[in-house]
Image (cartoon, rainbow, N blue to C red; front, side):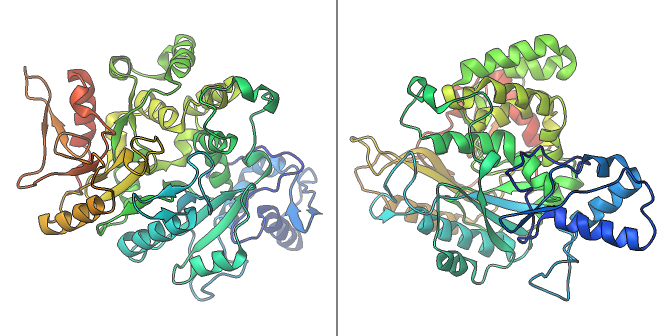
Length: 470
């Protein structure tokens, strides 16, 4: 955890765990230290107010300036020992968290959705996603799970309690104030000029959340590593090891499940990055820059990702994120979090610091709303995990296919994102799938990997060589 807290305005509570504000913990710590005679520096103070019943700290910067106290403060913020917990007999310092950003009704941009045949809601998708997550991972490797929702959403408290049943360490948090708002300097009066008007303001707030705001928010809660799940992300095979421990043990700072290509709003992002690298030529290496220039559309499909939070809170990444935020392109151009995260990882991390997890079966599919293809997969895929036996895979993929109208053009292919790209010396890239597999990817053509050239494939292959987990 970093020693500084995220900037907050005077109307926005500092994020807290288990409903208890961080400033209240610090207040208790200061009181204890004073009683023990440990606080003698009169410049150390904290102004704790109560606003609408929520404890709030307008300014705690002086606390972090005292190194000894800062360490004690961090220790307390990482601990739940002074607040009630679900288990009074076992207190864990939680540094790992799985997050969702959910909508409980219909999607703010995609509207009413179906699974190809039946109408589905955000709640039904989230419930199914949580079921697959707990069954195939969290039940074996417990960690905190937070479902965020926006201030535009007001789920029934009884619904939230129902979703929590049988799911330890699951909680719900509403994003409001500065955590769900336009960036400074951007006015709603300009909305008519924003590109792709079909995407709502809430959708663009989501982009800003996953690009810029999530990192200081989670850091303030004491988390060091995060895994994202979408409410329509499904894990369909058992994960047999702790993914967070793997990331730490192997010095991985970013991870993805499916590579992809994307280009929405990329031109303005490219311009900002080119200018940034011109001013900061040592921010990356010639090798990484060459890979990046070869195909800037190459990215990591970040409806599922894992990250070391400190990467996005440290220069050069944090510096560039500030530039992107001030440019407003997440709103005016709908430049998305996929491209922003992928660009930072590709330019500021070595391939060996990026993990391509391929050993669990994963599905994320967006359903088309276009009249000709309505109800059919438009973007995304069901991808077979290495080690998933053929019989199980056939059952999963056939269930996927049968959930859509037979008229849907569902591609069954071994030439898309599920396959490893190998590059024998002197040959063009070729796509090689695991032995004895009938096919490895079902869905729309999300990641046209066969279109990549030698250099992009070589970059992904470097990631593959340091990502073996099977």
